[in-house]
Image (cartoon, rainbow, N blue to C red; front, side, top):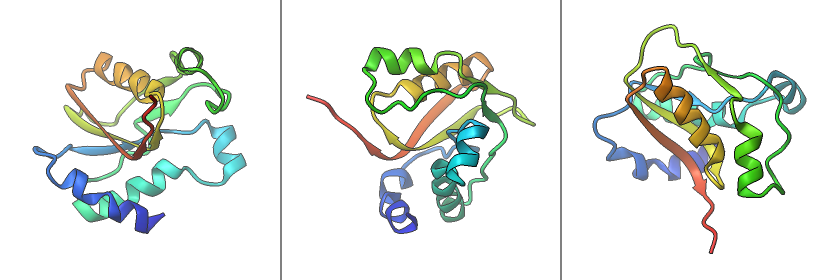
Length: 135
């Protein structure tokens, strides 16, 4: 995964100004226990080391276990993650980069972005390894 993360760096090098913090998309604690790792955490760690931007793994939490998004329609995905996140940072951030592995319909990052904006974050960038485009 580190190799793939490093190959994506050129896409983010031009991000100016740089975000203050990287925030990985959180897993619910049950899913984290089941999987043993959070892929967004792993990606954020590589990008943090490369860009010198800290990671805040505790600012954003998943409030409830949501069913897997795979196989769901865009509307079902949006409903699945509605109000599923809470943002409680130790300090106030104006500009953050939300880190995810794959953005499919954008439902998760859209819901998190709404949560961050409601909490006063002004700028949210989404940094992901891949984006799915549908015809």
